[in-house]
Length: 143
Image 1 (cartoon, rainbow, N blue to C red):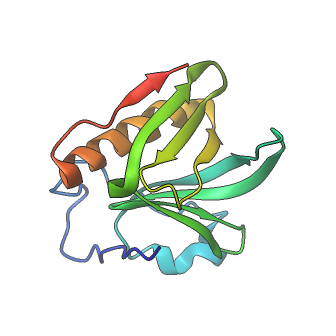
Image 2 (cartoon, one colour):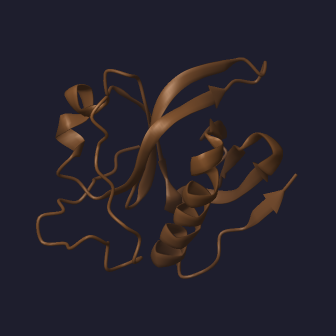
Image 3 (spheres, one colour):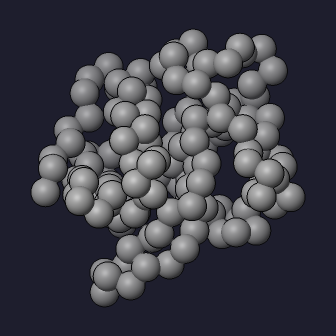
């Protein structure tokens, strides 16, 4: 799956389609993610990808204007989830996990753990972006 992060030159501090604030790459990630700095994205930070065995692997997540990117620490994109391709999301607020269930059976579902301070913002941002793209609410089920 390929997605495009739009250039942010002409935008103010928020994306006019969603009114979400634009994020900046934090200093510690800047060396690897400097190319993302000029793109429209709303959040970047550490996530844990949860595998079927419940084993967690540290990654970097990016909430873009149309997709969620899961990257290695060197900025290699390992997974791109278009928000328009989501069927719904499952959340476990107790441990800050979001499960992304894909509409297409050919796509693998994805479970990520976000930091406690980022969980609510990321979930809200994904819901708002989904609404902007699809014109309807994203189904969110709390487990």
